Image (tube, rainbow, N blue to C red; front, side, top):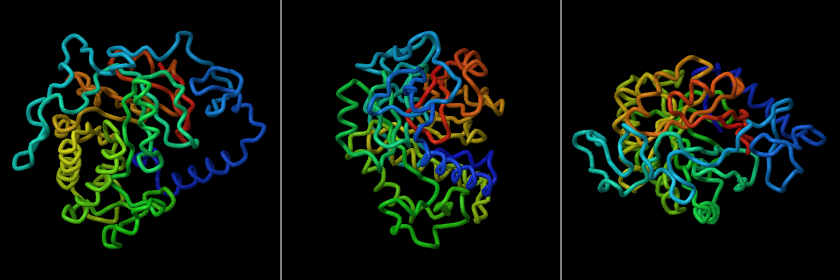
Length: 336
């Protein structure tokens, strides 16, 4: 699921996750069940997810991305931005393997509409947007292929910064790599200083994303240095680790997004192809993510507690791809 650890103490985050689980298990008879993935009331289709009671869909239809089209998302270029397919100078730190030639990987441009579904069971493929972000382990190649057939680009969500006991490769991560609890059940922070051990394990996960046909990677929990990880991590440790992740993705022809980690955006902007941000509006941080748009790179942004009328105006002015989502990240969405 999503990681908002920098805003939630561990105990509170665990309590929140437990409450959400109990809520999802008692959904029978809920008025939310009559709402579509885009927040508008409708007869319940087979693959829709609950909405927030009392909210309505925006007055204009969502799904016509700007720039780009569903058949070829990200191919248009906004004025003053970097053309898609252009790799900016400095994307590879000195001494590392060079990425594929420019144009070999997807370059999502600002303003692309997106869907982010990590929970709620089967991915609802009915949302008419050019970009989907879904769990890499829980979806097989057939799901990615089906989305591609609809003209979508697909981002592979994986946890790159903490151990999860429910993943099929969990036994590959030794106890020495596992630190303090993240605040989410069954998860512990990685000791990201141990690049020699973590690099092949992350490479295997990225290979999984590549083999399933994904276009990009969203690596989660990649700001352990400012958390209670159980290790004496430094900002430099995090930069080295995150650059290693970017190198692995680019070697495989995959785009990669910087998830949160706002303090290190100035250093990591050249290494990452887009940003994924949670709640920058609620915490008055969106200006700190704006350099991605200025570099011609998409910012995929969500808010949980704020309604769209509280953040969409500024998000649009910054060129973000923004929507309201529920914390469990099911199919429901209310886009700007």
